[in-house]
Image (cartoon, rainbow, N blue to C red):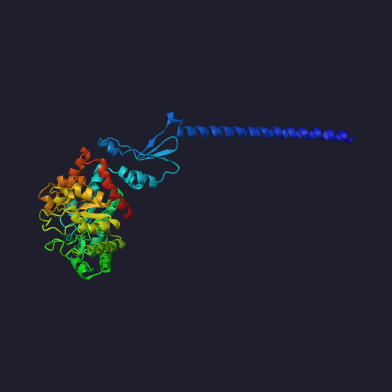
Length: 460
């Protein structure tokens, strides 16, 4: 009986286990089917995204903005191309997509991805406008502009220049100046997403648009010749800090100072009181100290007047001025402060209109000379910051060249920004036409605009 009962019990339990197994098998089959369906979907997705071997590569390239196509320009090679095997091309180099970085892109293309995005989004018209630094009067067509309202906004919307330089007539009072600069900067940000270079000649002493006007409660630090003769490097740094403090409070961000010229010709009346003197070491250390003082307050410093105005006898404001020195002679004196400034991280250098025939072999002003700007300053001395010309309305330029001719020549020479052309509209249209005709290449244009964007992004 016990055996029969056990067998009967076994039979019942076996039936239960068989029933449970059947149900489990059904559930497992459904799960397997779902897994297979999911796997199939994933395989299809990967096949579409990555392609099936080299015969089905998918290339994804950033395209130029529509305005480039509308202008009839030939599409250039893009910066980044993604391929099916998970690699990216940055410039001419192939990287693994998983390890490629922004630094790789910057190294290969010369600009960061953020700067490149601005370049890709900007039209030729906007890029060319960024090359100019003009007075608010030249921008708006109104004399002695002292506010930034609808007229300024409309002018910036039409031609979003890279910078505006203010003269004493534009600066009437503290509140007025603050509002004018703040509005102007905002108009630029609204138009191109970048701040405006808000510039002024504030060297101290005889050249001080703010402190020398008598309209602002600030200290005029005096002539740099006095600092160089009796002061210390720390005194020079305090000069920069003092000027930088009141410039920043008013809303400026670029000072066309310090003067880095070595006064090697005592008859020179142009920089006689603006230079730190005839001692090369003093001029070098003090100009760097002033720049560091300005930088400490958030102001960009501009070393001037490359390749050195201290040896000349003429006045470039009125007409031609030149130096007879050779390159070796300049490297012993005039170029030393500029080389030291470059080695110290200079970001703005102003190139003068002096001629150096024993270097270039002709009397072309330095600001228009490839031998001076590109061969000497950039290639020989290793400078890769912004090169801004001296004022192009000065006699050394305006008596010999038309505004459009001079502007095109300066960009071809290697300058990045054109300061105060005699006829802004003519100069702007001249450069724009040179870009569209290929006289100035897209690569050359982008090179300068990239330098400008890079510094402006650090100001935002």
